Length: 341
Image (cartoon, rainbow, N blue to C red; front, side, top):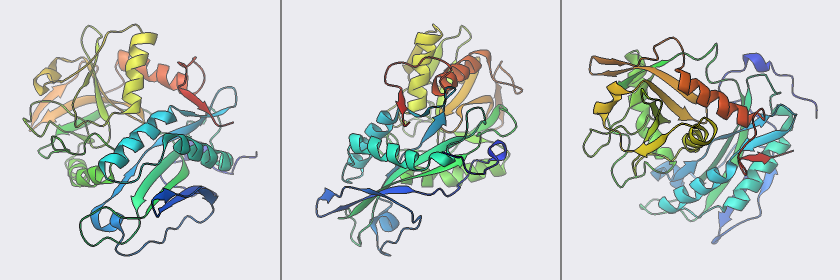
């Protein structure tokens, strides 16, 4: 199929409407068969559950053109499983993982012309989401829901190259103990908006959230997990019941252990330890790994030995290996690559 006439090299990380999206409706206790549609607009009641009580969850993943010309997605089964968990926690009907995979596959295939070519630095971002659509005035779950998938071509998260970030320790809490931090609920991201806007106004790139219970352990940022590297090259990620189980982070830990032969550790990370690490990064779908050069705790600076000019050496190897797997340059573990066509 002929590609759309898009300046892939100068594409930003934003929304660009594509031709088709997938929608399935839940009514009278069951999901319908679902279909691809052309209309990008949604009409819902003014009293819809999503508008009144934020009853919604979402996922984010990408489609790539590999070195050999295939169109693939990366571990979408884990996105489907995580959405199932989010639905259960928010008292929404589960959209089954198998149907999730089918919907993602159909939506990407229908928008094949928008999948950027290999080597362009751009990808096709995929956004599955599910929300309560029927009227709810009392605080209770909606009775009707919509599951949808749309796509948008996006440029590289770091336009002009990767630059280590400066982040601040936030005075606000991202997620409560026994709350919703472990699921991908829209409400979690709404809660983080004031903190990220404030951080940007103060000259920082992101926030470091500590645990809400004791404020002594590192959790995550508003939209990414932390990854640390010790001075003897051990890869460490924080462990907590209120951290979102990032698919990128889980994949990077496998890459570190099985591809790079590094020791890995998932455990609670005390903030007091941060000053002793050699490298730090934020990991997520959008950028894979964003290097962190400096953490500022109320004026007290922690500058990592990897510095403020480029990625640390271990972080760079992790990034290169995982993106190599995603783009088909490096052989992937079984089941990691889902071929669209």
